[in-house]
Image (tube, rainbow, N blue to C red):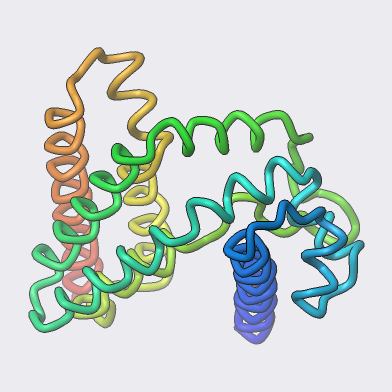
Length: 217
């Protein structure tokens, strides 16, 4: 258990570092500059080596920084949805918000995905574990917030599976499948993303309930 909490602490620290780098890049872009990764690292008060681990190229860093306003919009939607204790409604609002905004900036997200896929894959089996996520973990944090009302009904393995499965329903990756592979319109793609998220949530809750019954017997 101690190791799990330690790992979670490292993950959260990596997310904070990544967010600080993106915030610094956004500020420099707002000034009309086209900063290098090294210049952004200096502005964010992190080492240049650290910045390059998160963003190996200037193009990749600036592409994500340009889209970095969207998380604030999604977070605002999620904060408004937090007025209800219904996890289903909170999750539906979250999926709708993410997918609507991803469609609105689809070209930028596709470019970002292409740049991410051009980077070497890290399977996490090295001596120090995986490199910091190059895509970020915002959607994971948002999903966990949406599920907070039912969090206590789920054991840790079910929580992890549920969050992982729901992360497949949002973002540019889901839209690439629904648009390019399945041929759905944008409206239909969003509707299917929302439906899939609700189906996965129900399955996770059912599994959690079954586990509780098993514990009682």
